[in-house]
Structures are given as C-alpha cells and as structure tokens.
Length: 391
Image (cartoon, rainbow, N blue to C red):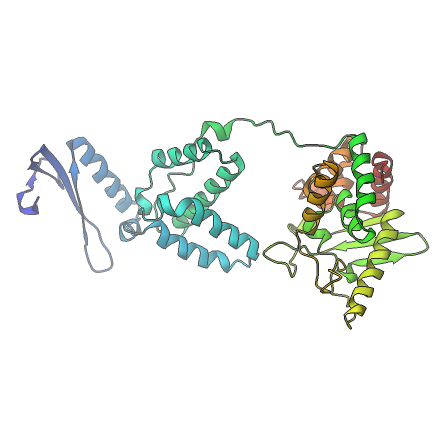
C-alpha cells in the first residue's frame, strides 16, 4: 500500500495502514551513513508488538554503531561465499581443503540457501535442513561438515562486519548430539595372518611392499608419496629410515605437505620391511632404466612399469579390491592404519611413541615438548613385530 496512506501511531517511527486482510503495521527508521541519512522501512507486521520488536532491534544496532548491518541487508549467501573463498585462498590452504569447501557448498548449501539474504537465514529453517539431511541417510560426519562450513561462512561475515551475529552458531540437532558408538573393524590375529598370507601369495613383491607399509600405520597418500630421497638404508643394521614429509591425494597427485604438522615424522623399519624397500628401490631404478631414464632423488619409488609414471594414489585400493574378489577378504588402506593403532595400544605400546610413529596430532603440552627418539621407534617396532606375528 502506498506510503502516504500510512498513519502514525503513538509510537515514534511506527505506522498503521489498512489492507484487505485488516490492519497492518510498518516502521520507518533513519540512520547515519557518512553525510547521508538513509531510511529503513519495513511493512507487513500483523501486530504493533511485532513492529516494536523489529524497530527496537534496529535502534539497538544504531546505539552500538553497527549501521553496517543495514548496508549489507541485501547481501546473499552466494555473494558472500564468493568473497569468503577469495579470502580463504589467501591463507595458503591446500588445494584439497579449498576443493572440499567448494564441494560441500555447491552440493549441499547453495541450492537451499544461496539466494537467501544473510539476515534472512533463520535458525528454525536451518535446523530443519540439517534434520532432513540426516533423514535422507547422510552420515553424521557429513552433516557436521556442512554445519561447520556454514558456521565458518557466517562467522566470517560477522568478523568482517557484514552481519551482526551468527544465529546458526548454536544450532542443536538431537541426532548430531547423541554419542554415537562407531564400530571400526579391527583384524583379529587369525584374520590378519590369513590376510597377510593371501597378500604374499597374490601380489608381486613390488605391490606387496605398498601393503606392508600400510600395515605399519602409514596413510595411503604417504605410502604412494615415498620418494627415493625419503629412504636411508643402514645395511649394517638391516634397517631403513623413512622420512615422511609429504603425501599424495587425488587432487594433488604430484604431492604436497603432510596432512598435519604432526605428519612430518621418521619411521624405522627393519627385517622384511628393509628388504622389501631395498627391492622396491631397485625395481624403480630398473623401470626408469627400461624407459631410458634415471630414478632421481625427487622421484616416487612406486611406479607403473608400463609407463614409468608414478602409480595412481588409488593403487592400493585397486590391489585390495582384486584381493577381495579372489579371496573374499575385505580390507581397505585406512583399515590397516586403524588396525595398527589399535593393536599397538592393546600390546601396551607407549602412547607418545605411538602418536609420533603414526603421525597423529597431539595438543597436550607434555607431548608437544617431548620428542620422538630412535629408541622409542625401535621399541614400538619390536612390540608390534610380536603383535603382528603374520609379518
């Protein structure tokens, strides 16, 4: 309805007007922006109390010098996300991290919320969105990842004065708050022995080396990211020192830094592991030579004999799928890492030595200032050789 039909009420800045559905209320408030005094007006309130609440919120923002909220009132989530990502990229984050944010936003947040103004994304609508995701079968961790990204986007909007507050900060979803009992498979001793025996029989020595390293707790990307320069052989001790300082992923097949600072570490492997890695280096040298090339210090040691290119990051997954088809044994790379961690704890391994060995982050000050030693590494290795008797 035209503004000239608004009639002032006894409350300053609040007006009333008639519609076909009855009386409605509107507000008009001016605020200072530089040398100008723009006006905020909003109509459609069904009660004068609702109009007063809305107007009081505006007055409170003015009193706290947060007029920037009015300037950004029409800022959509899509527009702000584009700005947010440009700032995020300047933080020297990995390509994987950046791609993951885009993936979560494009696949889950853009369609339901992208065209919303930041100020219009309400808590009730957002909580319904999360519940619907869970209802549709998404894993709790996936829904938590969506929630974490949305919170980060809106927290940044608050920090950069595009939004007064993040109303989604304390969203509560009962299903996400429940303590989940997640059963992660662990190979029993007899299962492990059968698995190792099958691997020895089914895989070439070169392929088995990759599986062997995963059995000792290395991440898939760390195994496939081992370079010649990362290996130091002590022939007298029949021991190899593996310096882990990079990892490979699907998005960074050329390699990147470790997953976390704690991922940079040294492993000591002796016995069969020493012999397998010795063989694998000789094999990589031979493959390069067959293609008229030389294996350089910065080259990955696990290579495709046909092309002399590094095996894909997914090589171990492919091998284990073939093993499953042949022997009906279902194992995947991360299960081997989890199995090593669990078996080491069951064997009574020193928790600090274990964390250093597998490269887990540790936030306690004691662990932060303690340092991994060769003695600790060797003790853990000896403990686990007894536990993983199939090796």
